[in-house]
Image (tube, rainbow, N blue to C red):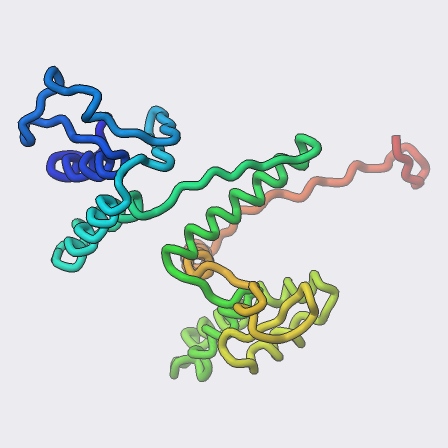
Length: 265
């Protein structure tokens, strides 16, 4: 079915028509379905239609027409005062100006193929998140630098000061675990990184300190921000309920009947 509703639907159909070199069949333009010929049809290298989505790859529309449509949408984004309209216009712009690519994954075995596919899906998700909100230095360094604003406990006292200190302590844990997994002393690394300039950090792959963005060690801002927000949410629930549900450790089977000596069967 046609995307959107009302005037937005008409605009999106116009976008598709421009992208494919087609003509929208509508009474508003004086064209009915029984009057349409092959000349109103557009072309694309491939169109994939599912129950919920339609993906058009490499539309056959005129490049200049597409650029003109893109510029028109950009002008509408600049002129609108409505956040909702701006968001919908940005969605249209992304669909019209953004490219579509096909990534083919090959491997020698099915297990390797699945592993590669999961890695690729993670990379695509991270890239989309980076496009939305940008990037920061990775390896846990961004959070370590961010919590420098908490030095002095924000002027708080008592329980509030304790809470600020807990957040400062918790913020170094991602970096500490990265260092520990690399066989190094975690808190030594976190202390060193905290003294570095913003954007600098520890590269566990090389064992060196430096500019992580230049080294390609980066995280999407959205991922880092979401991790902090989710951690704060969970901590708040824990503090208010004073309860935490965890999995019960599996009890080891008793070695009774073997004279105190354990045997494996």
